[in-house]
Image (cartoon, rainbow, N blue to C red; front, side, top):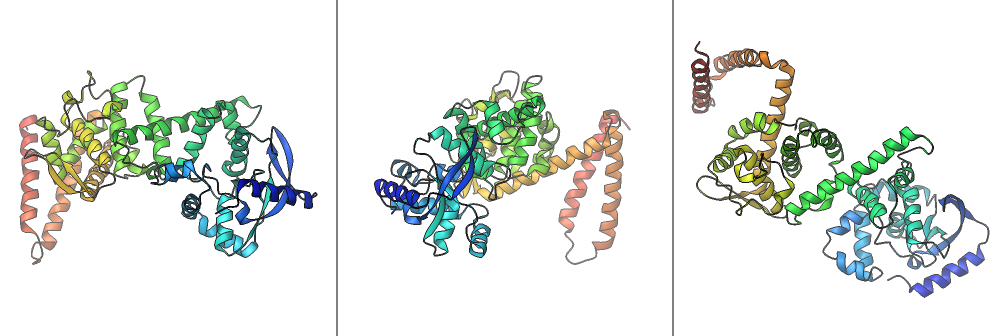
Length: 457
């Protein structure tokens, strides 16, 4: 356990008096400040439970409330230490320190609370070291000034060990809500803007607003999941959310229903870990034009779609609790009267969200609810959404809508020719699945008959 606060304060004061010359340059109170540097025993420092390097990880931790109440307790410090060990880049950082020792001092308050270098302190301890070099903040430093210094030291573009995406989101949110910082101040502090250049300031402010929207969107997903989806699940979603945000903001005013349609599909894509490449195709109309067909072609999701068409979503009356964030499913905003595929998407969002910590999930079918391995449902959703994304890309490549029908026919002819070649080369093989081939052949035959009836050709 760290030494008591009074003992730490006394030892830091004595160390400052014994080392009057060495300093470390930091940005503080709007100017460059030289902070005095001392060498402290690691036991005279306290790992900071409010460090934005681990805020997202700590949020969903079982011991979060206990740590908040008594952060200097042995058990609390052990949890913080383990969380820091699990951060990206910890092992390379430890190897670097082992090879080159500590190159720059950390920063502490006069009571030994680490403002930065929390990870370095853990690495040093793991390497068997007993001491850490630290610069000491003035005794009258405020929480706001500590936040500002943390931003400058840790979040700025040139620091060595990046924050995770969700921890950056929380940092921006805390600067706004706890410190009442303006968007411009935050943009400058995070080095997203250049002082004195209005165009740069505008871009920086938009990044701050985008980060705020990202966190709000994630909180929406957590709410509809009943708190089952942890914040850290979105650490790899930065690119996906950035690209979706641009499409959504372009649509939400001129086409609210289309924007809501995109939002529900994007949430499903995030729950299924679709990835940003396929998620790029999620646009207004995508669900009805491409995803529905992909659901039909997927044996598992076809059952969900059919249940939705029959009005058997398997959700509470009025729709799944928390799904009011998916407003605009149709003109009335009532999910119960939305198209079957939209209702299927909403139901899957509900079931997969609320089962995020489980190994099984229950889905509706025309024969009633069916419980399946959750991973099997996730795989089915991912496969269907990837197929829909490919379909959308093919449609875009085909160009003019007046030519789409002819282009599809040409594409079908090419595929049938390839099927004939494939059949000729493999149907004599004992492993050839004649039953599956005949089923696919009959499906193509029925599609051709339907086209003949529609066109009269």
